[in-house]
Length: 209
Length: 288
Image (cartoon, rainbow over all chains, first blue to last red):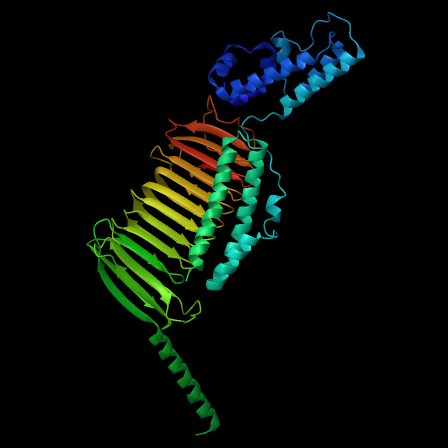
């Protein structure tokens, strides 16, 4: 059992706790354990939103079908293990309860679909295409102008590189802002700033008489 | 003598004078400087080639050619002979053109010496050393070959970087736009970062070291032999990843692999850590 396989059966695990192998993985993998803990907390909170009355079984069935459609529930897995999302109907329902329950569970299923633990976020990629046309900030322009005074041959190299590095920094900053816990994103931000630091250091050395 | 003949003689004379003048402007010099064991050689040269080879003995032998009288090379050595510097500069208030400013160096240093070279457009070639190597160039090609047990630190703006046969090294390359190519490079740490330069690695990532290749928009291509013992992870934010190397899935991964944009696994006993990361570039790992 690895993290990827574990993720594939996550809805079932949230619901039932999983089988022995899955429980073993959950016990030894901090990343997946954290994910399950988060999702269980959300599920608990969602349940608190439920009114006194459970919704009609059709709501549960609809959600189950939606999860199955998204590939989050494997065909046959639920029935094989004897589990189903559809609970026993014990109480009658009200329209308000129906709406609140549906909203809470749709939010929960949306979270299941979109949750990407420790993966870098999707890019805000206006980025790369604009690298060549982006205007350099004033500091960068001043640096380029100083370099080109003493070494005109390398002016364009610095201009292009500063543009690329600025896009790199911008992308990395966005990634960190979206997920401050993403260690990889933070490392990339440091890398991006190191690139810029290098350019400034080299350009400064080049500008000196 | 008719007018055509006079014109012809004049042209030949001018050509001959030009050639003589050009030859006169090319000045080749050789200097020999004592260096202490483990000493450092520092070379600063904006344009022209810098080639450094490992040698024997205790002398640094520098042969350099200047192409104009507007430029000169200063040679300095510290009293303890621990540091030698060769620095090219323009004379007085001269403003040499790029061609006039060119100085070509061919330097032999004792193999254990450390070497630091800085150029603007000049290519740098270093081979056969066992001392630390620190190279930087704005746009000149940087080539390092046959270096062992050394710290190899390379920086470039758009300078292409080629590293070949570096063993037991501590390699750090930062290049903004230059492509970085490595063949048989191994050691305790091999770290390469670029903004948009491509990174290519062909070797076995041996030594139980840490190999980290990071780029913003460049491509990363890694070719490993089947016997490579690696613990490998690859992630691209918006680019794609492709793995054609046999890896075993890891029971635990610091991230959840996502088909097409990340993967992780080990081969053999997973001795060396290999991390490949890109924002929008394509990452490919294949079997040699």
